[in-house]
Image (cartoon, rainbow, N blue to C red; front, side, top):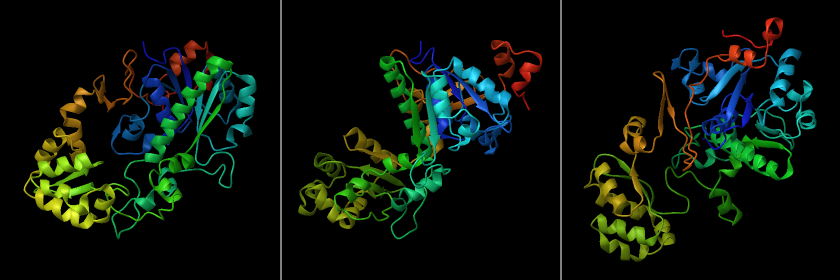
Length: 387
């Protein structure tokens, strides 16, 4: 048993946020039918690398889903979508605001026809406000919401975070909103419209910079890997490479000094409190790197973390994949002989995630869906076939 066994989800979303939401639900047992447009989800082309007809980008977001293709610009495609929604619990989409309304299947029409349906929309800016209805893209939202303004080396230029962090957190919030709506439906018997907008989610990520600003802390400056509030919380050079120290309290700082053989520095007035350490950050770096220069990064990181000092070596992806802890936590998933993916990080004790099906090739499940819904002859042409 999985937590969402019996839940039926129609996922008509594309690219990242919506498909990631759908994959979260699918990993935990929901039946997810992914509907692609005639040209396919554009991320199928976002490569190399490719496997079959799909780029790695698509493969990373669409496992455990059945795949069909419909043309919603045609009345027959919209009619079959409504037929699917008759038995569905959740509908995920990320059409530009007004598109479904133009086709006569907007949120109001869906609410009236399917009162128990949870309708999840991933959008760029939401429906209302000065930017309402505009399309949104991760990097542009990072720029607009201030994420780039706090990411980059001191004296350098603002940089995009190297992962699509806004898209991913929007997918997470969409899944969370979906589950909240399903929980509320148990009491009211009614579904509701759930919107996760990239703009809103981008702003929500700005901690602690926005709380600092609210309290008069001014605008943050680019500071590389340094934390705006905590010191030492940065990368520091060892004999051969860097480690990241994440020292959050005075006890951890004292232990750091003991392990590095400089216990006297824990009683240095300039380092007595976090505020003192932040004020004297350049001098503290000199002291710590002089001590760290005698150590190999991986070795001293292991000694420090097992002594209670939060830290880590700065690693590459191959090292992450090969780490025995990655394997022990079950974070790499293999399905059959060709699929390898990243597992769900959500660990449920009795009803864990399951990995049942590799991402579908284009319209892979058209024949099975046609049989399930008794589509034959001319009626079956509504389902587009494999390319």
